[in-house]
Amino acid sequence: MSKVKELFNKYQVLVYILLLALLCAVPFILPKAVYVRYACNILMYATLAGSLNIINGYSGQTCLGQAGFFAIGAYTMAALSTKFGISFWLLLPFAGILAAFVGFLVSLPTLKLKGIYLSIVTLGASEIIRIIAQTWTPVTGGAMGIKQIPYPELFGLDTFRPKYYYFIFLVIAVVFLFVTKRVLNSRVGRSWIAIREDEIAAKSLGVQTSFYKSLNFMYGAFWAGVVGCAYAPFVNYIEASQFSTDTGFNVLAMIVIGGQGTLIGPIVGSTIVTLLTETLRFLESWRYVIYAVLIIAMMWLRPQGIAGASRSILAGGKIKRKKQAEGAEGGVTNG
Image 1 (tube, rainbow, N blue to C red):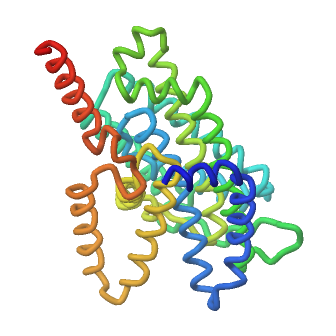
Image 2: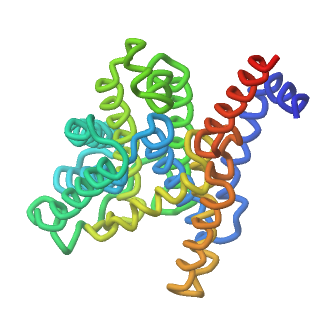
């Protein structure tokens, strides 16, 4: 295993280039347009789940309201592009910034909350956003939603075709991974992880926990807004039921299955959940039973997720290390 890691580190750039080339070839290799749509969904949900993973996996906060930030991005794109003809590429960062601002507002009353109380507040915030979208008819179209959302321009390509829209999701996913990796390796990322491991200890070491927790919410909400902005033209029609609590729990399940606190986990979870729900579509509602059984089995057998580290807190690594340390101290004392 160590040799494989050494080889990867040595040829890391080459591996990434080959992987990117393979991903670029995917829409031209897949035989049917429906399969390309599946690939688009995987990339879209991988980024959306990754944005939630930043909050839940790296700072230890429990957010169930990612569907609300996702909705803000989608409605920003749909409303401003259809009413004012603003370009998709201008709305992409604007939707993220607007979602980040709402994320900041949501974070303020939750700074002193943890666990189930934090979850309930974020879930309630998501529902408030969905209800506003459903009732603010002059802007959001109300229950009728917004139709005929214009497709973005991409080097003259027909982006209404999934094989070309795929590259928009791919670019967003690659940029998200690149930026997030650098952020996590910075002082900001280390502060988030310190808060996750032990908030009181982090505070005693000079980490401004309230500031970094709010920043964490804003960062996760920003990328959810960006993905929502890209989602709206892809489906060409949005309405409030697309951003229900089911969407939020679906994204949460992806990081639970894939692995929290890892960059690869949301990608793995998105791939498994998307392929599972689509291939079992013939079972209709029964496929969700299989889906639920998979989540329960994962929590029982591998709570840290498929890509999660075996020594992570979720895997009981913290408890094991504590017992080992106590055993070592006992051995020294007896000696």
